[in-house]
Image (tube, rainbow over all chains, first blue to last red; front, side, top):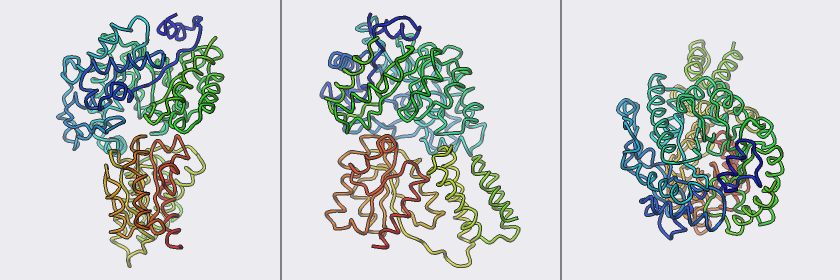
Length: 340
Length: 222
């Protein structure tokens, strides 16, 4: 079976030779091509080439058609991104500097025609041609509750959510939800199989479960418009176990990228065979683990998740500081212990 | 009646209801509670209660931390102007986000709590170089440098906390200035702070304020 067939079999509860093994090599492309992040993310061809080379080098299942998170802000008018020498680029210029800017914020009629979308579109198109029939291609979309962080910063967004005028907050959510719908549609049309749906305010680590249920969840429903196909619920690495049940019932999302800070046994029990449990290894700790410790943790996670199927093993954000031998050990162990 | 103010204020904080919290303070002052009592017997204990909940791993979230800090900071500022005598400041801290890091929420929570705990705070903003951290700490005679980093490369980069430690060592300042770090990567790897040369770390803004106060006392006692 191809990695894509294995993923589909896992999602649908069919027999597969092993669990899917995902790696999120988001920051590794520039190093692979010996480029600065700024140069690498300037062209979709580079991004696709980087992902294909990483796929070849490590043999994991998935590729990413993602440039950097701030690209969403650039589509909406951000003028400056801070490119570090290594690591993830940051939004430096906030589009919303005062609450008055919320009214002025305009969502393009068709983001797939926007110049800033083209690098992602080119990358996705190339990956689809090369590996679209065999390997899962992943994309990233900020939910309506997360995009405002890129537009105004977490501090100001938290202030608006908790203390600001509700009408302004809802106006911004409406615009961001419109953007999110368009982005998901554009990804699907261009051949992405998996969309990591980032919902920073969808975790009880950030806000109360009550606010998630009464405010965030209705907007998630609006973001997805009744189609949760290929969507993976992701809270930026924050715990989510306590809300999985609600999101599953109310929003219909079937796949959950469980935080290393969550109890995986509990997550597997909640999701069961009703969806896909994706276990993320703590790859920040892995930076300082030995090969043996890395293998042991992979084994532990897979032993919890594999029984009963509907289980995927994956990395978290894979910092560049990870020793090469630990990356190789993680993937090798995942294939070894992930066999059915 | 006083206990009711304390309870109502705590309830409002827990529900992240700023208006209700401010109304409690206003009513208390109108009914004869002194500004000193508001700060030391209502606001500060509420911050400490939240610290205790966090330490005991009970169900609190970032929005509650944000609100307790925000309201504590606002109320303290208002009340300080009404104090009969200037309060005793327990110490001073310089705080900022590490070089290359533009995140500011955690820092703001720490600042809010510290203000209510009578700690003088010099906010250096975001994307602060190691040299600027150390120079500011010396200039302001601060006992603690607090560095917030939300990304792995800003937490562990050579130009961040590691360089601050180097500078403190080179200038012979390690006894009089302590270094604390916080932010997402440290929550995943609780030993990471030792690898970036910090004296201590905190998993969240509320706990950070408590640990900073302890570090200030350590420096003053040495």
